[in-house]
Image 1 (cartoon, each protein chain N blue to C red):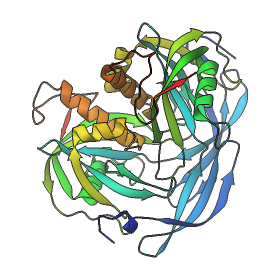
Image 2: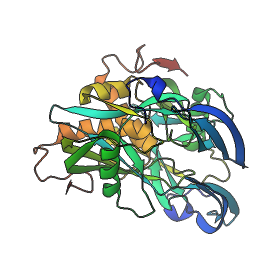
Image 3: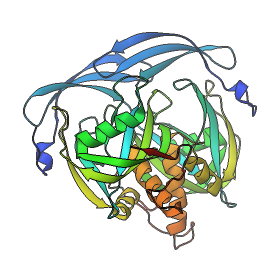
Length: 205
Length: 205
């Protein structure tokens, strides 16, 4: 049990991996790794292409949330629009634009990266790109045939309150909403001007 | 493709499930579900007992973070102390106390529930209970033998900045830090008094 403030003493090295399961949407592997002390250990890892999620904010200060039933937890949730990358390496912004339009019918001409995060790094490779989308124009939603959902728009301040009181429980949605609120509070330039936040700055749609 | 603002039109009904893989820490099942339109579909679901995560805040306003290497994403991360429930139904607060002491050596006599969230409800049953722990006393950390980590304490305001600038990327850590900061800003009673936040209020350690 090395205890030293140097990252070298923490690093697990991937040695080999094999598929345990390769299904329609999920691929699970067992990895053999070398621990920092030289011992070997097994890790069970869910492979995931990654995802994009969007806080769509209109000119009134309302954001649009998606209502879904999540059978894994057997609950109805309010979540920000989101979806998986179609393939490893897909541009997350392209994915975000597609998912926003599919689920809500909105197109946005202003895109701001809020964060790049990892959902569950202990056992899953999933990375999520979070965006704030503004300058919205509405067309028609067209979810996938096996996607059942509806939308509502609420003031961003109400969404923040819903996070704090536990009405919104989806982790990426909670973070996206708090970051969007914080960013708008911190911003000293108007949203449609050139500015920077996190590592990214504005991405024009 | 039902499009109606009633949850009944969204609900997926679990019909049956079978193990695809039942490993050391991960269990994966294939579920057959009935879609709202009566059609059947398959879902691949990771079963997870749940987890607890803790923002440990000392009297100076510093929080303690844990440095780990996460082989799934091949990165070193700064995360709030956290760990899995030992078994389905374990009290998350007991888990939080154990994990805080194991990873950081801290015991806390004041526990505040920040949130109950779900990490990835599209494919995993994991629920995470997030706590703010205060009135800390230090003893010795004793991580599991295959856990390699070290800790640092930084001002909460610095941690918030690290979330906003992308230095902290773990989703539950990002949310815990922003919620802790927001809660302390909103609080009108001292932290060691009786108060309420989210659904829970104070839980005395």
